[in-house]
Length: 185
Image 1 (cartoon, rainbow, N blue to C red):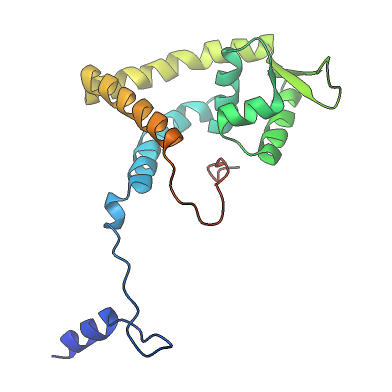
Image 2: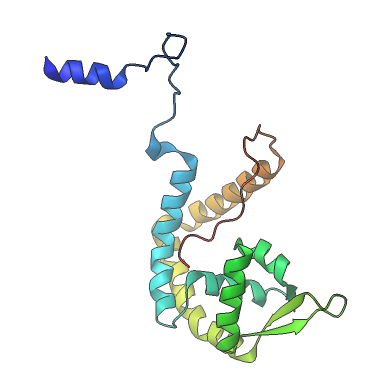
């Protein structure tokens, strides 16, 4: 009987200042929360890539930057932050580290000397060449285990979700969030 009383008091709604009970907010189970499902899936994938990156003394954020730089001739720092979902202060520190390792090059912007443009260096390209086979092995194993068709479908669904979320207008309280640094650096 004591257990039932404890359960009832835990679930009882606290009184409002006006004396009535406070309505409880009904949330889906934590394990079914879309942000948590996405984070858990990301983490289950990234743990395999992190092991590979560690062999080359790279963090996932550094790799993300190098990968982004592979897709452009050069990029302004603010654009790179947006492309890699890294906050400016973290990106600045990571760029300093990559520059010290001579994996990237920083050039003043011709139109605005306060800004810098970033390019991947020859050493950065060489490092990408060394890491890429390991990365592709991981992708191949994930695709084999998950299934090629399911992988294509999942990638398409995630792209669709991103596009829908970019256009959805939800009432925001407290403003829009900033990109995440993943807490690793």
